[in-house]
Length: 66
Image (cartoon, one colour):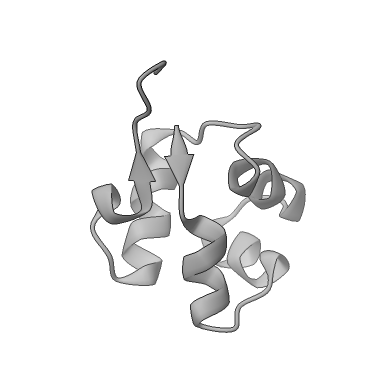
């Protein structure tokens, strides 16, 4: 799954730690999500989209191999 979490986070000048604190995960989890090493749960996907005031599909996209 491809995502634009890093880009959305940087648009609002938010650090990985700030995002992690707001959605209740570790900074390492944010790093793993941004680099595509971890696919977040549906709950985390919804929390991230809500925080950025975007639709889920604007931030997370399926790739052909998914």
